[in-house]
Length: 99
Image 1 (cartoon, helix red, strand yellow):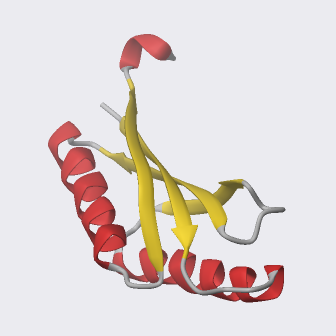
Image 2 (cartoon, one colour):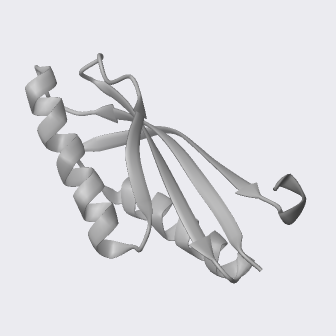
C-alpha cells in the first residue's frame, strides 16, 4: 500500500530584517531539505511576515515505518539549524480509509 505522512513546522527566522532576507533563508531551507530527503516541501503560511514561516513537508512510501523515520529525521535536521528556531512541529498521516 501507499503510506503518506506530512510534517507541518512553524519556524521563527533568526536575525533577518526584511522579506527579501526571509525569502533567501527559506529558499535555502527548502533546498536543503529537498537535497537530503526525497520529499515535497513548500512554505504554507506567514509568507507576509518576515520573522515567521510555516513549512509543509510530504513523504510517500510503501512502508509506514519509513515515512515515520523520514519525518523524524527532517524534524531533527530543522531543530539543528542555527538560522531558525522551531516553534511547533506536527506530524499527520493519511490512512487507506481516508481515500
